[in-house]
Image 1 (cartoon, rainbow, N blue to C red):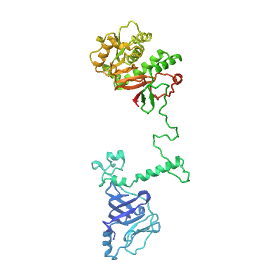
Image 2: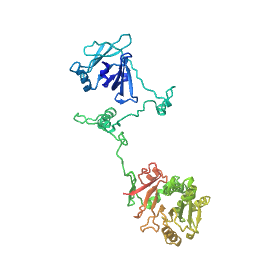
Image 3: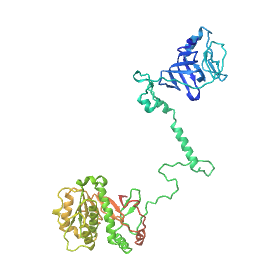
Length: 475
C-alpha cells in the first residue's frame, strides 16, 4: 500500500537540529525503512538538491499536506479521512489541522525505527529519531573519482541557493517592524533610567525631559550677549556669529587703550608682530588657503600688492607682507620715498628686505594686470592730509583700476567715503565707528589683557573663542 501515497505532499519534522522538510513523496522503501521527497523545502526555503531521503530513525512527526489527494486515496478504503499521527519514543503525536490517514513506525530490532504505512486500525509502534540527509554530488567530466564541487561552493560553501523562485519581500518584512513603537520604548527607557522624574507642586508626575544630541544636560546660566561695555559709545554696534554684541569705541578711547597696553609691556613691536601674523592668516584664507598654496602648485603662486604709508599703519602692512613672503606668496610692497618715516616702519622694511618680496617706490612699477589681492595700509589716524598728496592719489587710482579685491587693515575713521573701496576691513582689538560701506568687517585679537581693558573703563570678555580673527555683522 506504500505506492498509494506516492505523489502526496508531506511535512516531516526532524526535530530542532535538522528542522522541518516539505515535499512530494516519490518513494517509500520498506527494506531500508526510508522515504524520499522530491523538490524539498527546508524550513520554508527551497533546498538546492532535487531529492532528499529520510530514515525512519530521523522522523519525529509526519503530516500529509495534500488534503484533496489524501482524501481521494482514503475514499475507497474507509469513506472518510482520519487523523495522521506518528509515534516517537512510545508516544502518539497527533496533528490537529486536517484529517489524515494513520501513519506509525514500528521496530523489529533494538535501535531501529522502521517506517510502515498502514491502513486504519493498524497498531502503532515506537521509534527513536536521529537526523540524516543525503545530497547528490556532482562529478566533473563524468569522472568516477572524487566528486568535484563548483568554485562558488569551494569559496562560499553549500549555502548558495540558485533555485529560488521568488524574491524576498522587503516591503512586507519592513512593515512588520513598528519603528515608532520601538523608538518610543527606547526613549522612555532612557528617560526613566538616566534622568530624574519631575514632579509638580500638586504631586502629579510629569513626562521626563528629553535632550537632543547637541544639547547640554547640565544646567547653565543664561548667556549674556552684551559682555563688552565701555564708558564711551562709538555710535555703532556689531555682533559675532554666536550673537555676542561688540560695540565700537571712539578713536581717542582706542588710543588710550593701546597706550595702557604699552605701559604693561605690549610694545609696538610685539603688537606689530601679532597684527602681521593675524592679517597674513586672513589674507592666506582669502587667497584660497590649502586649495591654492600647495607644493604642486608653485607655478601659480598668488600675487599680493601691499600699499603702505610712512606711519604705524604702514608698518602693520609691511609686517603682513613679510609673513606672506615667508609663505611663498609673490609680494610687491609699494612704499614711496619719504624723507621722514617712523622708526617702526624702518625696522619692518629692514626685516622685509631679507625675504623674497619686492619693493617699489613708484606706481609705474606696479603690475598693470590684475593681481590676486591688494592690501591697503595707506590711511593714517593722525595725519589725514596724506590723502591729498599725489603719491596717495596715484596709489588709490591704481588700486581702483586694477580690479583686484582689497583688504584694508586698520582704516582711518572719516566721514567721507574712502578713496579705495575695500571688500574686507580688519579692525584691531575693538572696532572703530567706520563709515557705512559694503565692506565686510573683521576683528583681530592683538593680545590686550582683560585688566588693561578695565584700566581704561571697558568691561571686557573676549568674543574670539578659538579664533584670532572673527567676522562682525551690523547689529
